[in-house]
Image (cartoon, rainbow over all chains, first blue to last red; front, side, top):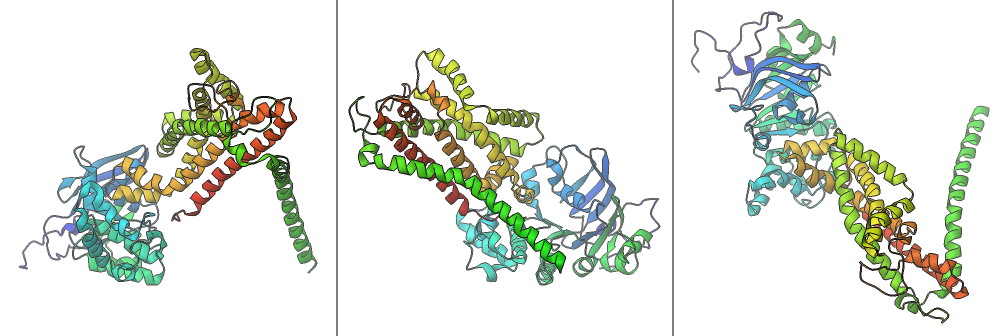
Amino acid sequence: MTTSATPRAHPGFIATPRASLTPRPPARTPGQRGAPAVDVRDFSFAYGSRRVLRRLSFGIERKSVTAIIGPSGCGKSTFLRSINRLNDLIPGIRHEGDIMVEGTSVFSPSTDLVRLRQQVGMVFQRPNPFPKSVFDNVAYGPSLNLLVARRDLPDLVERCLRQAVLWDEVKDRLDEPGTALSGGQQQRLCIARALANRPEVLLMDEPCSALDPVATQRVEELIVELKRDYTIVIVTHNMQQAARVSDFTGFFDRGELVELGETERVFTSPAHERTEAYITGRFG
Amino acid sequence: MNSNLLRRGFSNLMVGLMIGAVLVALLPLVFILLDLVLKGAGSLSLEFFTRTPAPAGESGGGVAHAIVGTLLIVGTASLIGLPLGIAAGIYCAEYPASRLTAITRFVADVLNGTPSIVVGVFAWAWIVATQRHFSALAGSAALAMLTIPMVLRTTEEMIKLVPNSLREAALALGYPRWRASLGIVVRTTLPGIVTGSLLAVARVAGETAPLLFTALGSQYLSFDLNQPMAALPLTVFTYATGPYEEWHRYAWAAALVLILVVFVLSLGARLATRRRFELNG
């Protein structure tokens, strides 16, 4: 990459220029990889009269892992669930601004929710496999709208289970209920299930918080593996985890994005006092 | 040391009390079953299941007409009541915030507490009185009216047990709301819904009051839903209040058969729940 005279802002760096924040140190410019996969544009969100997210504006870089950290109730999960509009079910929600996923608006009235949710996969806090067989769990997404021919399903299921590093453990028990697997296996099954939709973005809402350390390690390795093909946004309470798996880290506090930058930089020299207080354990 | 003894003594006392309560609760059931078997089993024979009643005064005959009648009336009632009850239950569980749900739930609770004879009167007024004749169909309608609120509430409660995360998982894969509900949520609760349905059917099968002035009862084997029809509870009622000694014995036997039918249905419900996928979360 040629060094340009004026450092171009990295998409992962387009944090809101806000007066309330202390000045950021000059942005370093990691490899520019085009427009952000997820582009948050002046996005605010409220449950009734309770504002949960305030004017977020930033981009999430393609094929990287972005960790969202912050104290409980800071809006991390709400933000994540805004990207695939899973908050839609809650009555009385309001939003302003928009989020673009691969250039298409999430909130536009013309948005095809089915397509959006195929594009944006999600892995939940607690493993939640369907009470169906392992095979059907993975095949469930693509069989909607017959995305793949029935005869291609076995190949797809195998590929996704391999990608989720679960194939060797379950290849002989594809007919068993997914709920009979161990917690860590269930979570990897849920990841395989999400991958079967061929998403571009993968949202993970504290994917390891219900897992033991060994299972956590496997899932973390998997996340690092998956970023070659997918854009991953992970919400986590575990700062070591954020440091281990993510390329970029965003710190949320009281519904605001306090700062977002390369993980190493955020953890070693946070630009904002609140970030530093949080990651050093002084609050949150 | 002393307090430990005291504590253990108190614990034993409470356990003893609870065992006592269970025994007291079971006792009537045991007596009913014993009584039925002692007084009814003697009259049971193949003939009892296959023959229709002998003319009054003659001995012999059976209650085949009533068994067929109960199956037909209850079957028709289930055909009407179960789909409606289950569908309404799904609606109430899936749209808990809707006003229609609040109204439906309230009405169902009121109906659940309504004496069954009131439902019978209602069916009489609306079906029998307008058609100007008694019919099995009117009986089925009355029983269906009893089934709907029961099934509605159990279906709703069953679906509410499904963790929301399961629904969200289906939605997050791009499934539209209705397919997530039917494909995942309802499929998961299917054993529970089947159980609730069977229990409701079993309860309704034993109802007498709503049939008294709808299906009326009959001494003949009939398959015509538009005509009066016999049913086991009605037969028990007629025979038990009849003047002949043999009728009384037949009433006991018919009651035993009725209990057996209910027992088989309940057993089916138990078996349906046993093979249930474990819910996570």
